[in-house]
Amino acid sequence: MSRDNIIGLLLIAAVLIGYSIWMAPSEEERVEAQRQRDSIAEVQRRAQAEVEALREIEAERDDSARTIPEIADTEAEDQSEIDQLRRRERMGYFAEASAGTQEFFTLDNDLLRLTFSTRGGTIYSAQLPEYQTFDHEDLILFSGDDQQFTFNFFSGNRNISTE
Image (tube, rainbow, N blue to C red; front, side, top):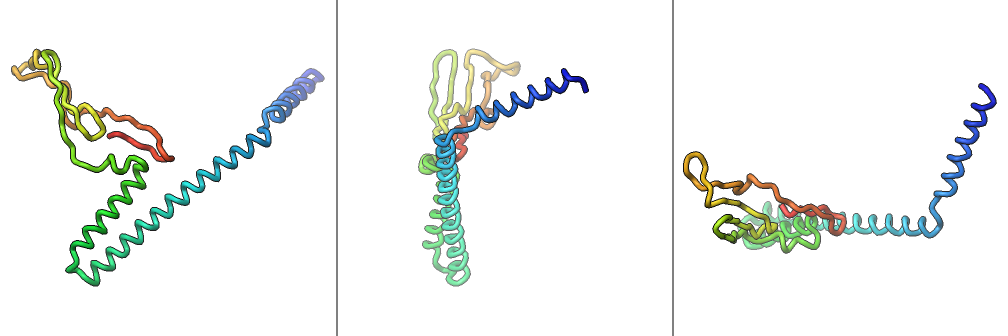
């Protein structure tokens, strides 16, 4: 190895060491990162506690179903509690909004007919009444499960999908 190669390698090492020292996080950044890790651990602990509560309710329901099969009302209440806990775990703040029945609303004009679903506020179907297909039916752009209009976002460390 020549003298130029050695100097080049030393300069590269100096740049790498200098950059790693210069870009090291300050004490405040370390404290903030630790606080974020602690809050994530707390959220995971709470989620685990909700899962345990769900398992306890399911175990109680199974035990009561084995010992007293004639109590149908409490079993239905337990099932609704389980469903509610599952929705709360999966949807977070949006658990109550995820329950309910699907209804449809139609907006119509001369050129376009749109049907909206109350589940996720999505467009359920789109139709062009002025145009027809080759077999003389109204032209339907999409309808029902043919469409995939969803909005994904994070809330409370959960991935929420409007689908």
